[in-house]
Length: 548
Image (tube, rainbow, N blue to C red; front, side):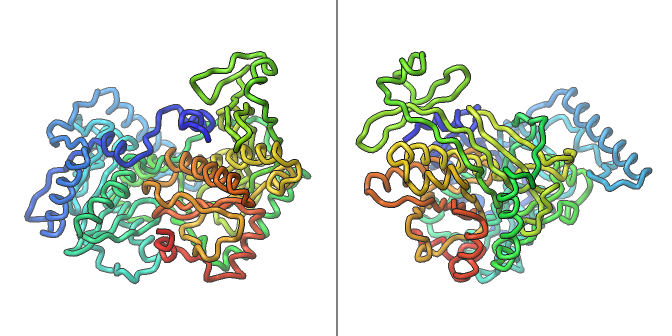
């Protein structure tokens, strides 16, 4: 229904995003970290050689380690050193005045890795074998903490079996990430391998050749090319005016977010997160780097709960009349354009033809990253996010002062993608039928948008909801790809329902080896659905394979 370029404009994405596994493989630059064969197990070495061969087959750019290095400017070394010095001054101030430390003190004795000049170039990811020594981890030798991913191949975790619970996998993965300063962990044994990344998923693959190659291309490579990358405040327009969570406009949605908590807690779909300070970093430099990677967050929690606020329907203008009505020339070669900074798109509606519509502004009330999802304090845990003409907006609760505890969800772009997709669909429905239930809901009460790290048994998907996404590459949460897949899939199943004259009430967005997003009438009603049908979903992959 919409081109990728139009979607990128809608979602405030400034760069072209690669979406297919083949394109991701072609974009990926990889180097292999030097290792000592006497300190690495035969299983790890054998797996790595197999992996390198398959990466070559799928056209990954493999760069010899010596050629991956560059001599970084002294100015960059001094900049990092200066940041650490400022950090330590702040920690000292917090200590003197007995304030809570937001960041760790970094001893100057461990700064020698920062002062190394020869490091892996920005944009080249690195695969390491085994547990390397402190101060000589791949992360110590990369020039960019955010533009170069680290993949560590280890022996299969001793405490993990194919029957291990979601929380056992979750705790194991988080500890391995912190101890090895890595973005991805691959655990291997003779006949199988497991893939951990920040999605809190734990897919297990066999060594059988066809499955191995498919998993490398569709699961591992996408996770490297589309890594976890939380949206930062600087990417938003921060509104000076704050909102009152309990005024007449926001109170119904605030109450929905609060009231649904007790019910959702009983479903066990929203586990408690992790505080970064509790993870087994080997030293405070690594902890400091870890916080930078997570945009200075103090913790991580899994899943999100949000409520899209009522929208204002956009009018659909017949394409042939749009130029006259808008007093603007309509481009012939794109499906989006701006008129006085207002973003318009061109859509095809069933058999009725082409129409022009302004992309509706949307607002979503959601929770800050890291908070207890089922026990929120509205005055400090709520975030109001918006999209308007291709710009992201944010508004904070009245009286709140921004701090490291206040960050938007890792899945910010996915939340906004679902919300603007809902608004586009509601506008089309309103054009076709003013009494349409979906459009009426969008204008009156809005929708809940929820995510958890599990899947709905397909047998329990309510009538009128349509699933999509199962065939998408396995990208990391927070990646631009995940947001584009969300809106693309939503518009596709909506269009299919329209052509088949089926009732469309919402969508179930499957994110492979990540979790599920669902658009529902309210969080409380969703919670009631899950408590009435406890077998409908659990954390982990139990129902995932039923979609294939």
